[in-house]
Length: 194
Image (cartoon, rainbow, N blue to C red):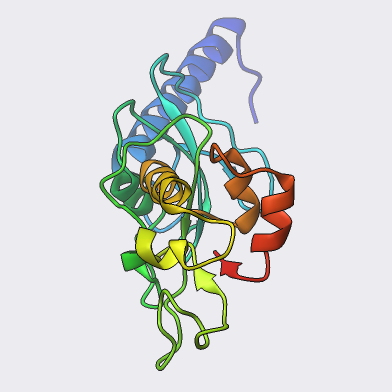
């Protein structure tokens, strides 16, 4: 191979950089095809795939559960739970979408948990019978009131919190609801499920 002059190396280097930039732009415009999207901040396994773009008003949300590509995603301010689910590859066939409010606005740092559909014969709110656990994802305020330690005001606050935050991923998230303290949490653990 002949020796290249310094000016030739500079030209070849500039062409290589230009091709890389054009390729990155094409990938961004394509949405990444079947792979994880470019806007993914980190995958569910925790590897860092940081986004190049940083918008001052963007939200970063964690989408988990019954979706095609669970992970952490960057979305524009004002996005809704349905937008996060779509960004994560959409709901799977086994998703119980009736258990979440897809119209709720997203908040930065929020986790959107898309629950699995309950097996046939199991009620979404009553669980496995009258003494079985109640599903936080689909229970009405009236159904929550039936549990000792939850009155009408607290039941309303639980439903409101669930709707505003796109569902509840675990019973532990109830400690974020006003009026539910550690003692109440412990008494509710056996009666509730996400």
